[in-house]
Image (cartoon, rainbow, N blue to C red; front, side):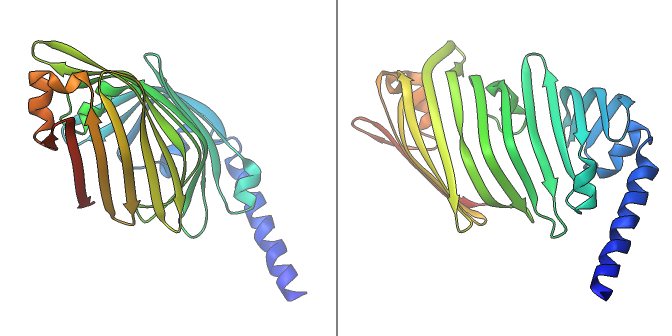
Length: 247
């Protein structure tokens, strides 16, 4: 009976909080966002609103993400598992997903979909590439900067190498990812193209290993071959790329 009373009081407190913020302005949602994520032109309410512009502050500038909209589930707050459906769109690019955070700090993401130009990666890594990246994940779970679960795939369509003499067409590629016991296993396959890539990607806790075989007509391009030699070992049929490290 005492345990039931405690639970009842806790639910009543949660209900009171929900009603208190029911008409709260949308700007209140920034309290729950990472400090580096900035929203402007915010409208709507805490539960359902949008921002005319969103941006991620990086060390060397800001990455503009575009219009963002969200919808919080009131029931999720009662269950102490805040859940928000988030959608971001900018210049034909898109990111959507259902994000949940539990009391242990684990962030679970369901039905995650992203579509963006691969040139966006240059904001983080000095890779001179082009094409479109599509990400579809049924489940992602993260805790303490570690990936606990990952199930889905990445597609890199119309991939090109941006060389000084002009773009070098590469092809279309798929990275299928799954996880088991805090270990993420990925398989790279080539769907079409002049650069044939096949191999595996493994992430275990903070360690990673990339083992890829690269072959095909594109490996004879002087500029691409020169760039690949910085990361891969030449062989008669192309290149062998093995990269190990920690993050």
